[in-house]
Image (cartoon, rainbow, N blue to C red; front, side):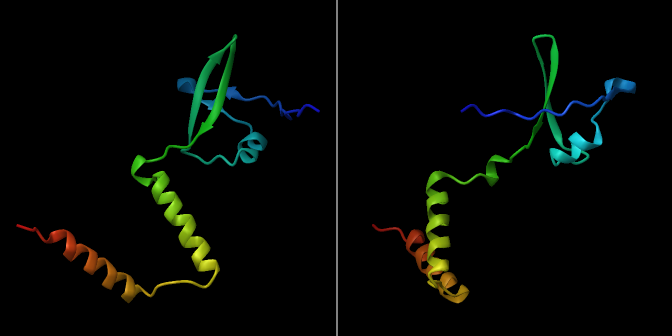
Length: 103
């Protein structure tokens, strides 16, 4: 069975300075907001507009960080947790080990 993609066709308008007005129904269906980024491409004589989300690379987890986060979420669901004071204590202990230099 093939999956069909529903398309909604509405008229938009090109305004001053090449601004394109996206019809409200499409704008809302795509959960767009004023100021969002879009990708504009030319493809076989048509204009293709795709919503784009920009992500700061500092906000992206590494695979190791993602695995730690998933483990922490599982632990919390099972009722396993650590108090903030315990966390600070463990972090201070680990930090003091790093600061020592051996001769």
